[in-house]
Length: 117
Length: 112
Image (cartoon, rainbow over all chains, first blue to last red; front, top):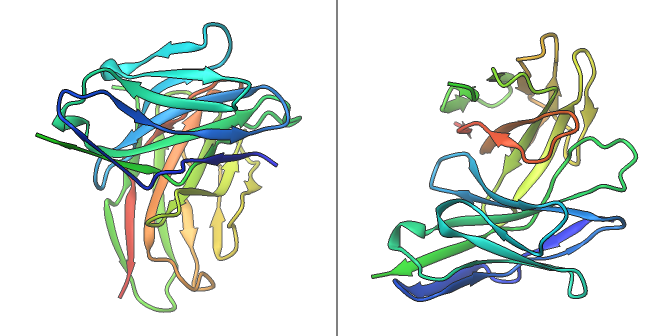
């Protein structure tokens, strides 16, 4: 069965420091991996995705993520955090082995990022 | 501008009532989805539809119903059979063979 785990409920960093939000996954085929951000009482905004190719993926607002197949991880990173990055972050996976290819995403529980000035 | 519109933003339901949440997209996407979000539980899939006049149950379909009479519309009805409907509901769409999902701004449903 497909699954996604975000082991940290909350990550706290100081403004200007690098940040990492962790994500591990389990799928039967090749994974399609995504990161989304959610601000309070809003929908999810797409940040970046990994489908194939370079393991380091760059996305919106200076975020990047590294795909590690051996560790089945897709951690979200940013070299220098901003207070405005404070939000709820979701990792999601789609399994390309799904015969129906429905586009369904499996989401992690979410990680709250708190960036302090 | 292309996007997904959910309405209303806030909805209050009395015990025993059915309510319908609206979701409209002008992205020309084939597939549409409804998710439920509860604190600390991430997003859980309620129903999804890949084409008009066809839809499939997700992981938590009990107490919910949907229709897909038009490509751009995918309304969700929360029936009285849903015992704990208070939650944040998110609608999303994808191109049929595409990748990332686009989300609406959500509807917060509260039982009063």
